[in-house]
Image (tube, rainbow, N blue to C red):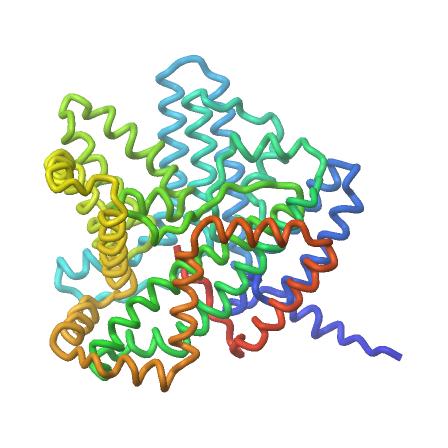
Length: 498
């Protein structure tokens, strides 16, 4: 006789503040398989299938935010009906008013939950008064689904997208659980047409989904979580206890950690979405291979980069077009300050965004003399130049992530002072000897990242060509490896706070 502890099951399915439902947990795996089975059984009945998808997506979000999941529903209602009103009226003044109200509501909701305490803290510091932060819960993913909803509203306003007549379809777009918490910030114009199609998983899609889920799990748990909990966090917490070598390796480690954590989630999101017949946009393209900061943003968090380009940079640049090159310079800098603010309520994020904006603006100003110098030295488009551009860009990115990670600017000063004044190169070999797993994972992570595209594509073709049961065996092997590295407490995804 099998005894089932129903109370335990109910407790397991309830919202727990410190236990969000994420792709790398065993609970998600079981719920995902159950949901996928029901979803496919409902495949011929579109209304039931999509309704079930909406319900599961809301439950998925409830497991991450509790009853604050209601904010997601409010956001969907506001944006759908205001967009509908914008499309229905022909008077430009009314369109602009409705757009202004919609944006104001979205910014107000996002601003209250994300920036209230930060603003109050600034006011307190100006007034030299004691600051007591308010108890405000930050719903996971609010920045992502707010930008996703605004994408729909802006496209309807610009008349580049015909608004959907179905509130249900709009809810599928906004609530879709794979990219709800951490993106990618998919475009409504690309997602909505897929809703009308019956779910279909081709052999190629199955292979790609398997590859993405394996890669995501490996990046998140084996690399990001392990080096974070066992090395990076310790150095950043007390940088003066360690040599410059260890501080530098921690910066390299954190740079890799951020990438593996965020891109790992995105890989799993895209892979999971494929099982339901939806293709989400790619969000990363080997960002550390970038030869400039601008190139980095064409490869990193691509969905956010495109959103900022289309809805902030281009309108701002167009409004200042009479200033010629300075229109680009100002628009780039302001756009990336906003990018920093979007990432979080803290001076480190604002400085991080401003740093990227400054570097891109400066590169634009010196572009012509720089090209003349390259031509004079006869190094234009050479492998030599590309290598040094990549090397310099990577270190600028790594330094920016030091800013990103440090909410106390003293940490930046301490880590840099250790690197430049207390380096001790001999510690490098000791580190590799005493912490071989940490050292090996950092090296492996960068080797996999800088792997030539030809080898990566060959590996993908081999996996896709395998029978489904061989792909399943590969996935099980990766899950087993992940289980060996998994700590008792799973480190939350870094981008959950944004």
